[in-house]
Length: 264
Image (cartoon, rainbow, N blue to C red):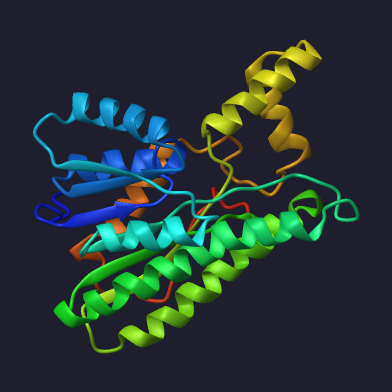
């Protein structure tokens, strides 16, 4: 299927690894011009090298910016004139007991996970409305609904992202711009791979058994009963960033393997 992304320019925050990197690859495969982002110049250059090797004829640019630093966020915005697609993907998390996590950790996760999307959207959305076309996608998480007790701050930010996306969608009425959020479930990113390897080393079990135990004992609500691949999540993201998704606006799109349940 042609997703009609040729000639479109996309910026994906937090895209040197994981779901963000997979989304950048998927959009490049569809012919889009892609701008990637990472916290350090080293990570950006490493990701650019991989992508340019795979897509030698595509337009690919990289920008280093730490979204925990307002000045760096402002500098990044000023260096990018316009985009057709904005994917607010950057995010951090910290697993810690609620009674031990201090204010600094709460504010840091909110600053990076939520305010990065607020600031980028505040900059790019008016430009999209002026040209009457654009896509903004917030990458939330199943934790927005499941809210694991050791990930309370992270889960709060992911719920907030859904709320921001819903509110921004109201500002696009009667235009060709859409704002949606996507809710991935447990996904086999580099972090998840490391978790499986660490648990396998500690328990003496294979990674396959550790994964099965995770879904049998922890993420029991999952219907998929395995980690989704980053490519599975990215393919859904790419569709909702395309012109073909024009009738979907203000929605929460679940790619959670059924883990959050519910009728909607």
